[in-house]
Amino acid sequence: MYKLDEWVLYDQFPNSLSERLKRPKKAVILEVLGEKQYIIWVDDPSIEVERRRRKVNEENLKPLN
Image 1 (tube, one colour):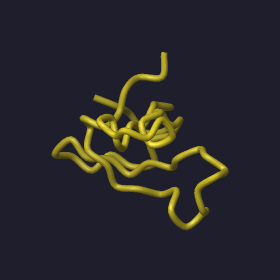
Image 2: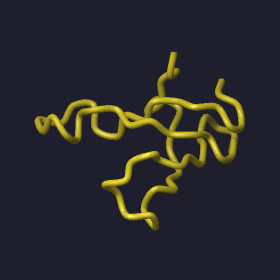
Image 3: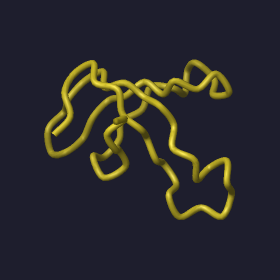
């Protein structure tokens, strides 16, 4: 569904009780893996650089628009 270099919203913990964890983060698709999985780069300076690259499922992504 998503394409390489497309900006999305990444929602890691949609059911969290913490507002900080529940808030979606802006991310870019780095790689499309198939099986509805992607490698993304989370655009959040509060996260350590080494932890911003993540393998995620499509269900945790939403269009940015």
